[in-house]
Length: 342
Image 1 (cartoon, rainbow, N blue to C red):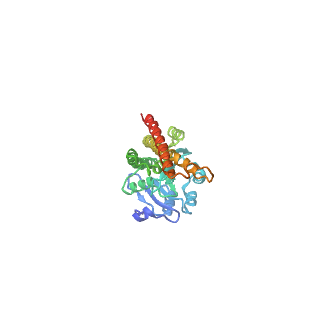
Image 2 (image 1 turned 120 degrees about the vertical axis):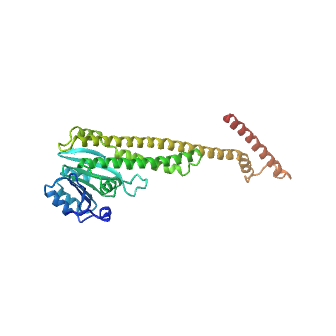
Image 3 (image 1 turned 90 degrees about the horizontal axis):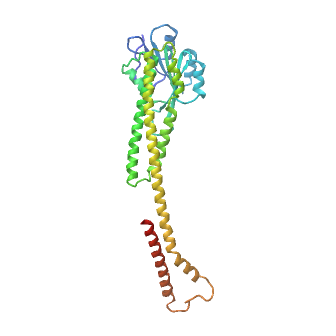
């Protein structure tokens, strides 16, 4: 008899073949944990009712060989593990459902690189999930099963996983929106020095999430139109509802991304305005210093015939001339600035 897996092992451990956790869902009964791949292989070789969920760590060298030997997955699944597209999609692969999902890593830090891929395969008796990095949504699914939730089929597990991922994304969108509120307040208050570095990073994050997480509509439509015969109609309807919820989250991501773009444009405009003011000030200083530079340059030439060179009040006279010229230029510039301001 299989006993429930201890919490520490289910949460963090993996057996000799990279199995992070395994669960047997018998009809009408509580889920039973499978601690090792040997238990799963024995169950798959028999005809026991229900279905299995096996979650693997592909970073373990023994994970892929065990899946090839015991899971009965198609070669296309393993091809996707190594060189396939990372775009989120759900499609039919013979009598199996194949899915690629991109989820945020467990230690997500609002960086565009904190997104990793989860590969899924669902058959009538087996649901396989495999990843190389710890991911949030699949961990939520694992914890839900530990709490006693009982999905009725492998497709119900996929439905649950999609909804968990949508919840995680909604939380990320909410946190990004809160950061955007703080940045907007700082921009309106004129404090945009640190915000110009934060906005591009958030935009890259939202763009990557939207690009990688949006399901391919054509593959999904084909799968929903012609699902495998073993998939109940209720599970197909639930999967379609989950994808619609997911689409709403993606729409929110697009809205936040557009808002960040507008704020980045506003920050750039304010920075350009400030730069123009600095350049204008420097130009005024240069213009006002023009008389003294010209006069001092002329009188600094080592040639004969310098005016007022022998005059006892020559310095005072030239200082008055420079002051008069500077005052005249300042008056003219002031009038010009006043007309532009008016």
